[in-house]
Image (tube, rainbow, N blue to C red; front, top):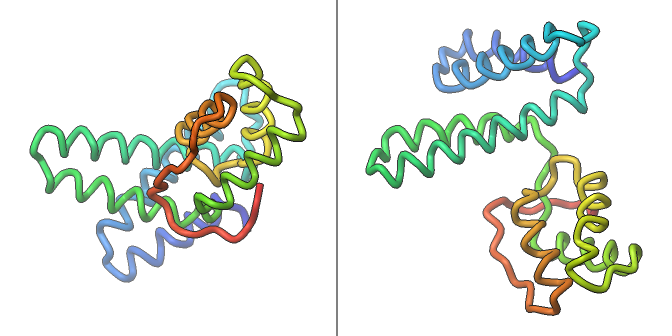
Length: 166
């Protein structure tokens, strides 16, 4: 079952369960999927890879909005955004742990032969291709930069455990 079909069936389940928060989040996802399917230049199909990119973008938007609401002393609005982000994250692959991320980055840096910050683009290209929604690229970019500059890389990730390495 494709992600589009999964979202559609979960919308029906949310309607039956009268789960307004979930229903609102999933309707937003379906709207984005339909816009991508009918966009100019689209063939009317939505591959799961494209759907994943849309989901990652939507989670990032929700988290950014929540941060702004928190800064503006609107915690009730931030809670709604974070709840929607959590619902959307259920459809993404499990995020990598800090240890997995560091191990994978060290291997990629060694594999690519990167030695300085000048090689960051090469490393990030490989990481982006292998991570596919399993790591926040903002955090990855900071880690790669620190590793290439020889600084300590301990970073606190906000997501929970993952079981695969890139």
